[in-house]
Length: 118
Image (cartoon, rainbow, N blue to C red; front, side, top):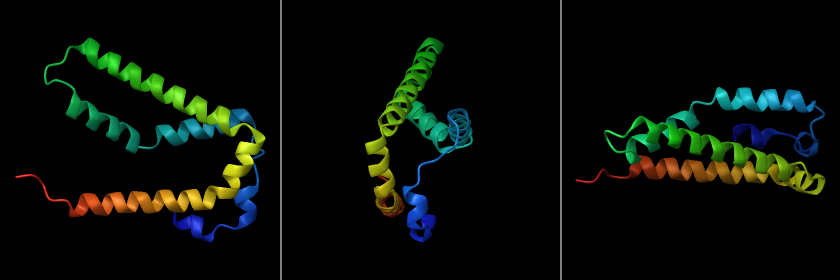
């Protein structure tokens, strides 16, 4: 978010000329190196799974989350591969990043100021 305030308009509206394989590799490494997703999913498992759940249930949940993630990223890739949609996204990207950053900061402030029950 901090970088979005400084970025110039040329970078925000220019599509990448990187080959598809390079983009895939970059996206894959970015997601594998991002600890937020596994921590979030683990917290969901800890909160929602029964204490002595069978291994099959855990594996089914992992498969379901994997399938949902693959489906989501495939949908995003297909939608953003359309030239008009991609151009519109790139034009609005700075504002999308700013709004998302503000929403995450507001959520973080809410969590920090929320009192624990009891």
